[in-house]
Length: 195
Image 1: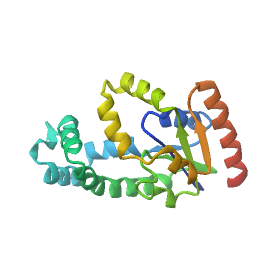
Image 2 (image 1 turned 90 degrees about the vertical axis):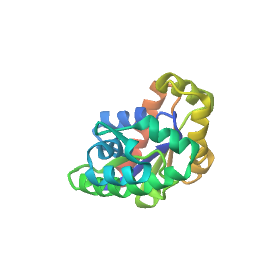
Image 3 (image 1 turned 135 degrees about the horizontal axis):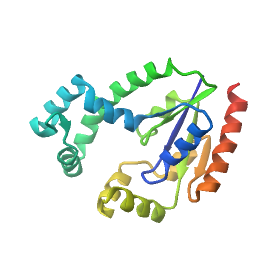
Image 4 (image 1 turned 45 degrees about the vertical axis):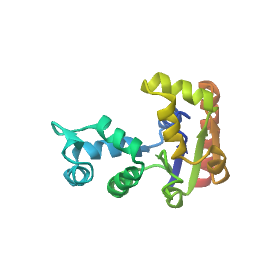
């Protein structure tokens, strides 16, 4: 079974593209979602995050996202420290999940695939792109955030150009119908290469 990494900058529409692959019957592992679940449910992660951020990391056994986000925003080195705790656990979870799948290929959706060298464990990589202004528009609507906070996240991600240079496929996600067509074309190509 081939592993196909799916990545793209924040607001590019990775989730939309992932859903289109799911609609074609392809198993999709969304690393950020699984990381959130593990941060909620794994006692090992909880303990390590409390050691890193202090007792306020969890409130009533729930991850205190605003508190942690504020620390990371003001002191970016904490993001690396947090990732060093969470990413190995997600990697183990993915390996277990993989053994339960039965398909010619699976999609592993990871926001920072290249940044963490995750692409090295993939047989193919798809990068999702969208114009920057459209990405701002989507994020401002979706996350009720600010342009400054979006810029801080973008700054921690590779540029589209750098990702595209290292990708096997690129899907430009501007209009849903066109995106669906591109997903289907990539799907057909992957089936040819994976069977």
